[in-house]
Image (cartoon, rainbow, N blue to C red; front, side):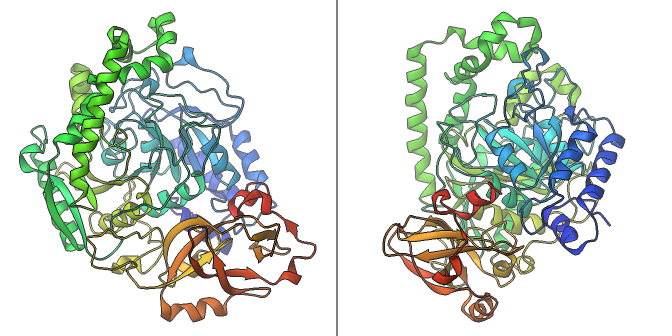
Amino acid sequence: MIPDTLSIGELLDGYRAGRFTVAGVIDHVLDRVAQAAERYVWISRLPRETVLAYVQALASKSPDSLPLYGVPFAIKDNIDLEGVVTTAACPDYGYMPKASAHVVQRLIDAGAIPIGKTNLDQFATGLVGTRSPYGACRNSIDPRYVSGGSSAGSAVAVATGLVSFSLGTDTAGSGRVPAAFNNIVGLKPTCGRLSTSGVVPACRSIDCVSIFALTTDDAARVCAVAEGFDRADAYSRAVVQPARAPAASGAFKFGIPRAEQLEFFGDTEYARLFFDSVKRLEKLGGQCVEVDFAPFRMAARLLYDGAWIAERYDAVGEFIERNPESVHAITRQLILASNSLSAADAFRSLHKLADARRASDEAWGDIDVLVTPTAGTIYEIEAVEFDPIKLNSNLGFYTNFVNFLDLAAVAVPAGFRDDGLPFGITLVGKAWSDAPLLKLADRFHRVSVEHAGALGAALPAPANPLAAGGRTVAGADSVGQHSSAGQHADQGIPVAVCGAHMEGLPLNHQLTSRGATFVSRTRTIPMYRFYALPGGPPFRPGLVRVPSGGASVDVEVWSVPPEQLGSFVAGIPAPLGIGKVDLEDGQQVSGFLCEAHAVEGARDITSLGGWRQYLRTR
């Protein structure tokens, strides 16, 4: 039976076991979309025959060969999908892209199937989801209320079970506020982790592609596929290991704003739910510390009160000047207001931001993670239409600063008001702490709510069955200096993997089921050749050390509990084995190596630099 949640893990397990087919799942999804209550989720839906062409492309492939095999997803309509007009919720602006956005193509190459393009606040300017000529997107739980924006349709599509995950964008909170208002997870990655090539800019210097999912497991799977350095995007960055991040298990310190700095706009239930959330985090091993939130608010105010509104003008201002009647009145008013700004104003804003960054650094000396409400309240659509600018601004109180300060964030469900409307908190960490934030968010999520999105279905089981017991789970576990857990929570043995055991790939479960935890993505020293071995699925690479003519190869380092290492190694088939692998940072760790004789006739893929790059060529 096809799971109501369409969770990625359950779909992949079902495909492998033959309980259902990709064609059957996609037929089910298209029928569900056609029969769904009208919430103004979609701007365009792919014709059935186009979707089935993606299904047919998977016919010759195995579920073990692709990390998102047969997984349906939706795309915010300011992100390009080849063959579908991109409108950014402005029909007269629409254009036909020559290719899919970088992240979209990576997802399709990994087996994911696009279903359609979703509604948004026009030109991604807004946090309400009502500023669209395609209709005000309706909250998935109570249609009288806003869905949150600007990634409105993307969030509602996930919350109502129309797709497994979706892409949004996030400049000021557009990937987090809709998650909170629809009882789902919203990942706002570190700026530059996911390429923005093929994305209509809002504020290009701080734009992010975001991910919506029912669980942090699914968000992490998607991020692992979508991320990657893109030379075509000037703001793309290579993934690095964070110098400091919250512990995925054990003790950690989390900061909250001082009591007088919290703002709930008169919503006493949201206030109660936030303090209940603080108590749950303490039960999970967290120590609460009040921090001065003023520097974060100082940065947040710059988004519309500083010169960054001119960056929105740079993206679409000339179009608005030429076509004023084509643009939503509030969007037009906000963006054209930048006409009065000068170059001196821009420098003043840059200096204010530098001051805010320096002041906010003090908070990170005391905490591993900052915790805030995702939004201080939620509004009815009618109220927003009556007072559109002020109420929209209120929703950004806890979100606008994150990209300015180069932080990562995960919005996670945290409970419900008495009227059934959801409340969420956001876990904020330093740049590159995305993965451990997701793991901490998962622990919190599972003790806070019982059902997924607006479906009424139970949350899908965690990818690692040990997670429910509070042990470490797959994903980066870079423990902050305030953790008492040491360098690794389990004091495990570091093992380098370079193929199907990597995060999100078919054999990764052989690590996660043993309680192994992700440590880092890195590269070998340039003394190795890399091969695609014959056979499969699952398909496997061979890493061979050579005395000359070698290159660096991408690897992941995992920490394996000592008592589990023997059974893990025993399952490794010839011609692979465990030897010592030298990493570019000077470390030498145990890792997968291949016997040299076994690569005769195998395809040399060294020039590709890694296994994920090879999979995208298959």
